[in-house]
Amino acid sequence: MKSPIVITIDGPSASGKGTVSRVLAQRLGYVYVDTGAMYRTLAWHCLNKGVDVQDEKKVASACRHWKARLECAEGQVFLSVAGYRPEKEIRESAASGAVPFVARVPAVRKWMKKTQQDCVQFGNLVMEGRDIGTNIFPDTDFKFFLDASPEVRAKRRHAQGVAEDVHQRDKIDSQRAAAPLMRPLGSLVIDNSHQTPEETVAAILQKIDEIRAARRPS
Ligand code: DC
Image (cartoon, rainbow, N blue to C red; front, side, top):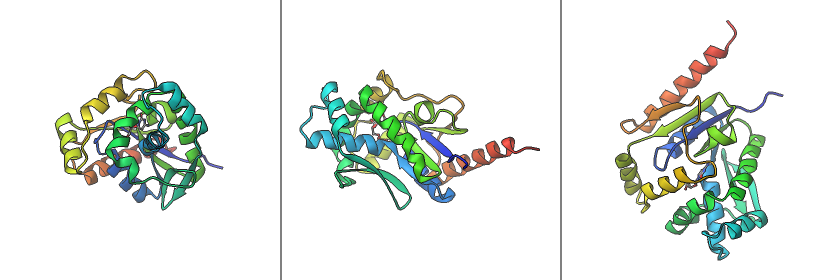
């Protein structure tokens, strides 16, 4: 059996990963995986259980014991916790503030790595995050890194009505010891500060075609 194709989309907060990855997955008929939502789900779970997210040992223990399950519905993979999918809650400011602390814990990243790699059970994937091309699927041929200027990213978050300190989150994500945000080797870097999501999707589809054409035997 052919192994599933994985397209990785990494980049900082508000770099357009979510919109672009969703549209790309729809276009290609692939399953969309938002790995940030997985970390957010664990952050929400910790807050619910009164776990101090700054205490790495307690977060690691919560991650070892939580009853999270990978599910796939309407072309999207997500985690449900004890049968519940916290969709709205993970976007609220409490979870947004807690998530970088949860995401820097090595035991959490180990759990997430295995769980995210397990997503291939659902088929071909477009997976977005911070370490997908560097750490989760480093061997895929299809790696992209989206970026935009800090001003544009802050404006995007503001326009979405999300009160979030983009700079602070980027700092924690880039400086942590475990799987920091980095441009994957061999990735196509796209600065989409002045692009529409459609234009970014078109650039990615064109690159995928080029990679496939280069691999075809002549
Ligand atoms: O993409 P997002 O804003 O929903 O991500 C939420 C947090 O999770 C953010 O602080 C970075 C972290 N994250 C990560 O460390 N690794 C990933 N693959 C995805 C997200």
